[in-house]
Every structure is written in C-alpha cells, then in structure tokens.
Image (cartoon, rainbow, N blue to C red; front, side, top):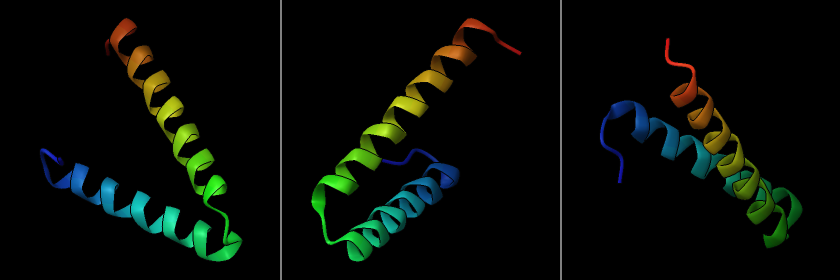
Length: 54
C-alpha cells in the first residue's frame, strides 16, 4: 500500500510499465523478470542508503 503520493506514482508507473511489457511480449515470464529486477534494484538502493546516510 502506498504511504504517500510519491509511492502512489511509483506503483502506477511500475504497473503501466509491466502491462506494456506484457502487451508487447505476450509473455508473463518477461513481466515477472522485470519485476524481479526492479525489486533487486530497489533492495540494493535501500541497502546503499542505509549504510551510507547522507
């Protein structure tokens, strides 16, 4: 669940991106792979920010 407006826009954007990939490829594994890559990127960015606070 989005906790603020910025998160809401991220959820909407990712949903649109995943749906466009599915429409273009007609392959669910492509959308699942993109979702996994996005989660890995987000996890890595979170870990970097937690270990190196600004």
